[in-house]
Image (cartoon, rainbow, N blue to C red; front, side, top):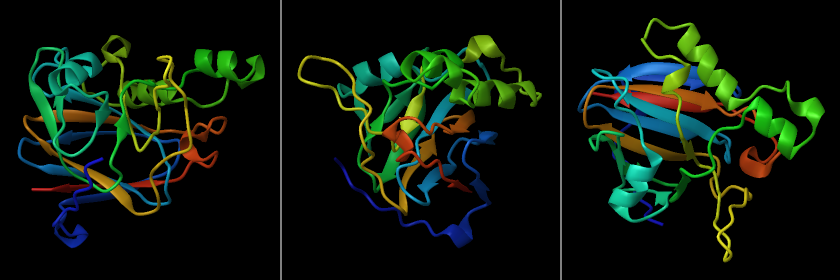
Length: 212
């Protein structure tokens, strides 16, 4: 775990927004800008995707990111690689130390399989992604959704190669910060999940900041 603190102060940010639990967010981040996700209350899973603003088919690729860096977890120094092999973002600071890119986003289907049929209609991150792109004139559609990053989420791999959704390793005030290596569209679902420990069973707001 590479713990690296940022030297940037919130007062110098050109964008500062608190995203409530369970809500989506879609925003352009320009090349050279720095983007921070701040886990205000701790253990809040932040499902995130990135797209090249110039070519939406050139999007975050979990498999290429894992292969390029030789690590299944994300932390300071990780380059987020696109489906075309380009670098979208570079993680430049991280006070949590480890982030998941294997567990994917909760959906109506996974809610019903994991928990019970009556949970199918609960809010989910996949629905939040769809809500965001449906209400923005951004050129993204359902076919652009792919495997996402789960910032602050703890998904350890067991000795027999299975994934587990464990208690988070984040805490109030932890953050991750990344530099945009090209103009990107960031798409977030601030996870509403109540049924597994990814949010400590308590979805909470996160703060999103951008610096020039």
